Image (cartoon, rainbow, N blue to C red; front, side, top):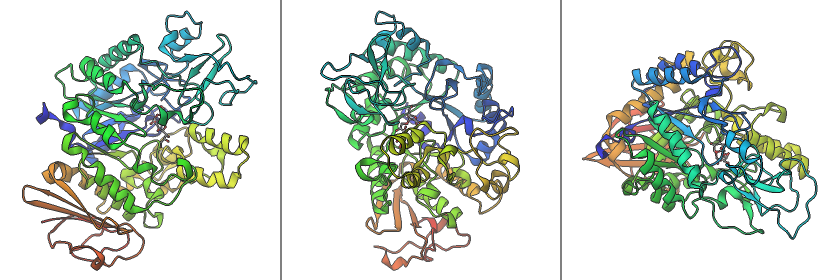
Amino acid sequence: RAGTEWWRSAVVYQIYPRSFADSNGDGVGDLQGIIDHLDHLVALGVDAVWLSPAYRSPMADNGYDISDYQDVDPIFGDLAAMDRLIAEMHARGLRLVMDLVVNHTSDQHAWFRDALTGPDAEHRDWYIWRDPRPDATARDAGPGQWRGDEPNRWVSAFSGPVWAWDEASGQYYLHLFAPGQPDLNWENPKVRAAVYTMMNWWLDRGVDGFRMDVINLISKPAWGPDDTGSGMIACSVGPRLHEFLAEMNREVLGAGDKVLMTVGEMPGVTLDEAADVSGRDRHELDMVFQFEHVWLDNGPDGDKYRPAPLRLPEMKRNLARWSGLCETGWNSLYLGNHDQPRYVSRWGDESYRERSSTAWAAMLHAHPGTPFIYQGDELGMTDAHFERIDQYEDVETLGYWRQAVELDGRDPAEVMAGVRYISRDNARTPVQWTAGDNAGFTTGHPWLAVNPNHVEINAADQVGRPGSVFEFHTTLCRLRHELPVLIEGTIELLDADHPCLWRVRRRHDGVILDAAANMSSEPLDLSESSEPIPDGRVVLSNVSGSAATDPLGPWEVRWILS
Ligand code: TEU
């Protein structure tokens, strides 16, 4: 099967459906809107789509809280629309990778509704229930606030305790994320069997793989009543994770003759742990999404809402180090998604928007692994730049604001600065298709404000225009399909300590690919590099007419073959 691993030379495009394209004027993107824009993806040259959840959901976390795994939420369409999407994608040679959220369900899922009927309910131990700690007294508190007798002191990724009180049964249930996202009990073989049945149901419907949401959390470790800190981090790579993933591979992923793509989202995973998951001989998953590089600008005690400046050498070394996974297995490559701000705003320079966004994209794609393009990044879309907290919608952002400002009394202006920098809503503003009303995203009222800069930044202006961010990305996709050195080549990081020069060298079969970028807004004297740039053929550049050995201007990037 190794020879048929299509995802090794693929570029994957992530669609966050509620913000992609709205076909029926209700202000929320939908599946028909995706179908209507598939030719955008064909023009871009991507090979597959990772579709964020479109399942039935009360939308406590915009679909990452699923109430029916085998139905489409009416806001996005229905199963017939999903079948049309699969058919239309396959007709264009595109593959569909579904988002699989099985660490937790929605609290509106039938399994949880049954579990709430009492300790003897059929589905009670499909979730994780615990008695209050006996040595503490509880006080009344609202959802997301501490009562005082929680089973331990873990903190939710969305702020507050990871334990929600169920008055009827006098017990708490675990939720590493929102109270509306109760964690499934993977120790229970009935849970695992139900998940595998559902996954096979989607494979029978024609999907081509899965992106597995926080899949490193499904095996819960032993813990004690005084355990504190992030519940998400505490539960990363628990004692039975590999056993569960190997079982899932036997029961689902490796059971058919179709070569799927599977990528595990694993916040907190280390390189060695990722190798244990993605190793070719492990038969677990094909690759993982790591978080070390997107946490490099986290502030004190890992608080991403109190960010610290990114030090480029740390990013350079991180991506080079994680490239090592491709020797034994494979690696994913991403800078943005629906949980991360727009990298052009976060780590680039909006006054050099086109150059800095393409410089970051080109240096990412220069590494071994499968690159993921998040919707809108192929256009150089920027952060939302909202001014007020009431403009934000994200449950994580609003949870942080409530805890920091309303409960802990921190300075709203200081907290808002962090929110503006890192909020997940930054990348969830509607995709900017045209300069017209609502950027051509909807004829209705958009669920989240459209960025006013859509009049300058939109697909209509860029598709087919030489030198646009979009056309730069079509070249990135084309070169990944044409240059074996990008897929099979070794990688060497040059000038690792330089604060703004980024050089990586790939070698394969006598071909050398040099990627070189000036990741700053100042001109760069290349004499500072450890070795001269070879006078080869420039196959990619974000500055038209630049020669291989020219100096690198602000945010200039080029790839040279020699
Ligand atoms: O994300 C897990 C996760 O780590 C992020 O929620 C979190 O924002 C982190 O701080 C990012 O740096 C997955 C989904 O991608 C996310 O949208 C969901 O909210 C979450 O799981 C729960 O399903």
